Image (cartoon, rainbow, N blue to C red; front, top):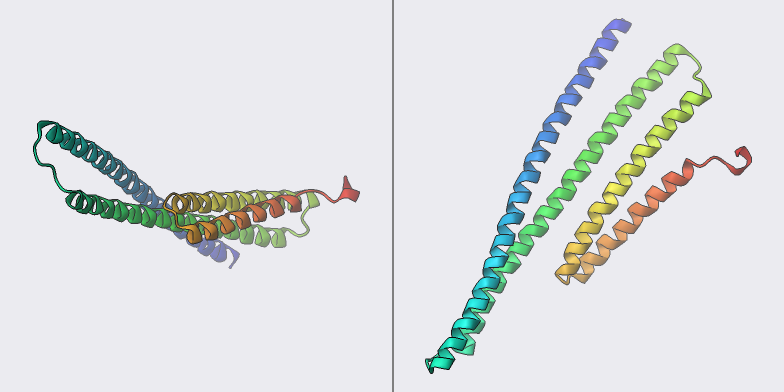
Length: 203
């Protein structure tokens, strides 16, 4: 019976590893798509800047030659059209940033699930073996704490990146919300670090 339970546990662990590997592949593919989209947006922004400069240069040459130039209203319409394209690109960039954050959340959850499985297996093993040395328990707690701190710091970086993006586009409310979440994640990391410090009377 114990062998059967062990085999079933190994099978579940293998299935979880397969799911995690597939998720990692999807995340890598998404990162490649995001990088390609960023390159396209950078090229589009450069093209917009170049087009605006060419229009200004052409208008100056026409005025110098005494030729009629497009009216201010026409140029305004053209500027509005380009601005709409830039806004659409900014929204797409924001959507990708949000998707990246969701992928980061999913990766953190997969890591936490792996930690939970490892912890459950360790607990079962400890129960089977009997009392566990205090040193081993402390080592296990330290390992789990380090992983939790790393996850909190990763979340803080992701939230800060979203705040920066909203700030660049003058979305003060969204920026403030993500700044608050960044602070919460940093505070969580600091709290976890503090729990790893030995009590003063034990030093």
